[in-house]
Image (cartoon, rainbow, N blue to C red; front, side, top):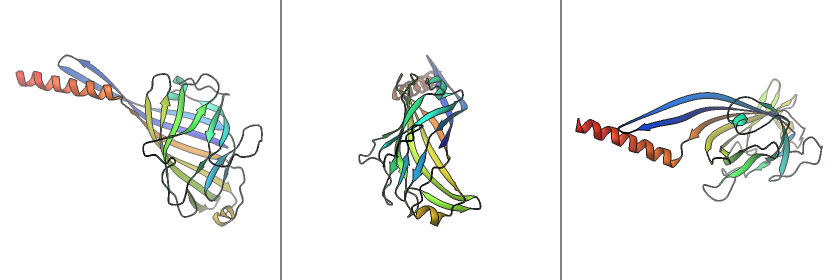
Length: 224
């Protein structure tokens, strides 16, 4: 499996002074590549043990991956390093289910970094249902069958408690196979790609300060 996560984020930074406030936004794209293995069944997506070749852990078991690419951005600043290994959660769901965990508002640790001193963890809060075939949709193309699934979640920085929400579409292409062949029980290893779109979630205290700054500005204007 070769998985590439691309995060496009908008970071909000606020500056406050007596009677005035300002906010600036900056956009950045951050890439993370990993190597591993994956299998897909009618109701689950299972990640394998990489690179030991150990059997796949049935969902909701865990697989392993190795970081192959780290560009500038949240992954680099969070201590993620090329060559380190991590743990990835296998996914399963009913055809009608939408959440990965039974308690509303809870989350599932989807990807953690096990070495290298990384501060970041990726959590999933929802697995968006696909077609009747499973927690994903299947599409036939001239090159082969494509399976795609959508998830929501957040990146969590353990060093400062900050969170960055994301929605993601992840897809796997099975070269030379049709959807009917794939759903007939063939589970080959496959390259796997993913795209994450993320925006920074301000801390509640930041939102409070922003509100106080705007209120102070309005009060000064009224006095004038």
